[in-house]
Image (tube, rainbow, N blue to C red; front, side, top):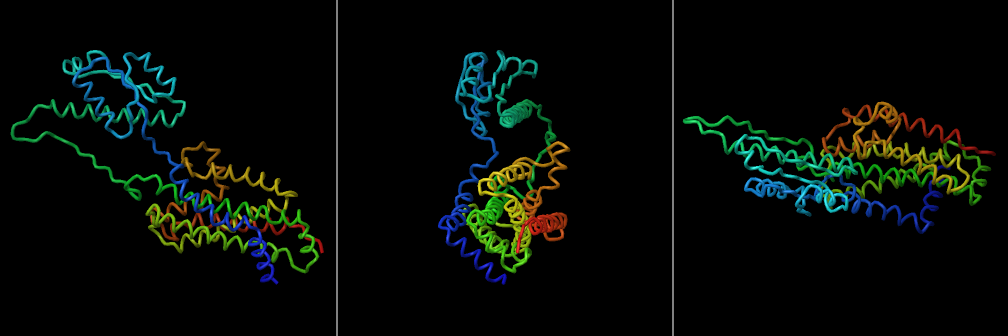
Length: 370
């Protein structure tokens, strides 16, 4: 019996001229565009310079700031007030104002002042740009001290070299961090929204009444609904793996079998959740809006863009009930760290709990009348 039900589901999908194109086209477009758009690296910050000294050292500081790769010189003002107008008009993001007698004070007293003014309408961009500029000034100060340090006869100057070592993402490439998480979002959208529209579309067409008078039990009916989206999920994931490897040269450090195992469990979670929404919805519009409401909350609280550790305590408690959080952790841990199954037992038990909960709910909430 289940064989014919699964065959019916695949025929319904293939008869729809739009769905097969969506299943293939969406991962292609998302993997080609989103890793470049979902980028939190702050570069090309528009810099305004106010040089009140016009000395050798002030020019050297300006060159150091503009050659760092983070700042792009867009404005040179004669006063701080004029520079502030450039921020208000959007021509600059950060102002570096060098005091009068900058070189004289630096040579005479060893202390000279500069002022950094940052546009913090975007708080992240403002804080990072001022931090970058502070690091450049600190490096400039170290260079000056090194030049002025007295030479010791027969002994080298004491020097501490700091060599940072970046684990798991040595090139600090943001795409390596984002691509595995984007695969999770894509899997959630396709295997969540499509089941959410499945049963309710049969309600609108009237075919659900034909299923209700058959001897098919509720468990078999829900299982037949889940299996096609399981196959679709694995197909989409395989396409994503190919694009990650050939377009971005991102390969998992860990085992692909581990990812497929957790993917199979996760697809059952979101598909079961979609079927629950479909059971309670009367129209496709209702199912779409309810699913969109929950998906937006789950994505924003999954740790996709912001770390969960930086959230308030009440939000951390809410994320315990977010299946996206666990699967994103799995994807990043396997892709970047090469974690094995024993490192992921917490995520495994959490996802299995969601599978049992949502699919049991889907079976119970399906109202079948013989």
